Amino acid sequence: MTPTLSQLKTSATCTALKCKECGAEYELKATHVCEMCFGPLEVVYDISALKRTVTRETIQAGPNSIWRYRPFLPVLTEQYIDVGTGMTPLLKSHRLARQLGLKNLYIKNDAVNMPTLSFKDRVVSVALSRARELGFETVSCASTGNLANSTAAIAAHAGLDCCVFIPADLEAGKVIGTLIYSPTLMAVQGNYDQVNRLCSEVANTHGWGFVNINLRPYYSEGSKTLGYEVIEQLGWELPDHIVAPLASGSLFTKIYKGFQEFIEVGLVADKPVRCSGAQAEGCSPIAKAFKEGRDFILPVKPNTIAKSIAIGNPADAVYALDIARKTNGNIESVTDAEIVAGMKLLAETEGIFTETAGGTTIAVLKKLVEAGKIDPDEKTVVYITGNGLKTQEAIQDAVGEPLTIEPKLDSFERALERSRTLDRLEWQPVLV
Ligand SMILES: *Cc1c(COP(=O)(O)O)cnc(C)c1O
Image (cartoon, rainbow, N blue to C red; front, top):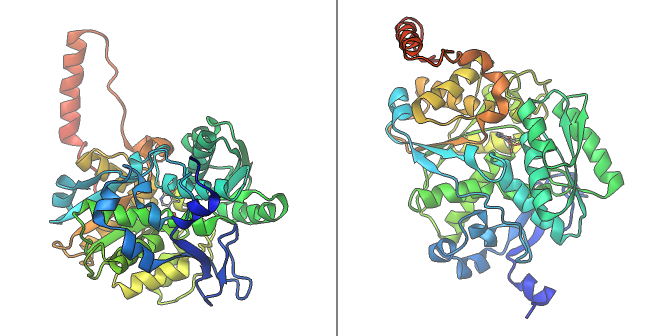
């Protein structure tokens, strides 16, 4: 028997949208700013219902995807879109840890997230599930690349019309990785912040569901699963320290929110977690504000190879700054050369090919360790959020070339000898 809508609704634990600044509450509609004070809206949950109904066992009995945490996600029905997003590996690092002098390092590997190999699949799975419940037929986004991949792919799966916007200068892997799903793709001649401004206008005139604009309160909740999964994968324990990349700052603030919710509901024992953030120097408004002790950012024009995290006017900067400060974390930035070296270091020590955002995070991890800002004994989790196959341009000149040989044994032997000589002379792994 098909359940009625009201029966479906009773299983929902989210109750309203609430302004993060003034606390005004709204219905769970497609809206993202407070009409009173223009503050951002966030989903609120019935915590006592969560305490009554959710246990470690009910979670573990759920699907092997982000939807095992469904009571903590803003969908009202069981008709959510499950394309296998989430439950990516949490690897105990051995070789990278030793190289950095850390004893307790873990790598959360969203470079292999499904379906499009970045953490954005988490936020889009949630946003499009809610978009469909709200009756949207066309979905859209303002993207730095990965979000366009994810929105186009999951919209295709769900049979939704899709029109996505990107800056025109993105990597080929991000453009082709969107076009393959046949959305309408708008390549805007401008940077992300200009793309975002244009999309806000389109959202007002076309009545589309923009995952990171009018659906942003739902979208951003998807990132909490990066916090939940780490707790579960550590054996229901919090880490001591996390390092994650910052673009808008949403991911960073929601990992923290995820930790707080599991503490509040009694799924994990409370303890302090230090939250540190990573930016590329060519777009580091949040890192600059952190270092200069400001609680507001000065917008910048991005100029870095880390395009996926190049947001010059980040929406959640204030909250990210607050979390880094109150948890005794840090926000650090690294150069493009350090980002490339970070990508190589992770690949050479752990066999993980991450994109520029991951290179940024690894390079910041290294910088924080060297500055004594991460203790070797701290249980540290570094978040790798995207896949290197999408940003090949960034490392093309840094990976060397294959040895081209004839299909003959002596040609192979000569090439092998040459490569061993080269190894001794110049093929030391590049360290930052
Ligand atoms: C979008 C993105 C981020 C950061 O996202 P925010 O939530 O806007 O801070 C990090 N890494 C990758 C690979 C991304 O695509």
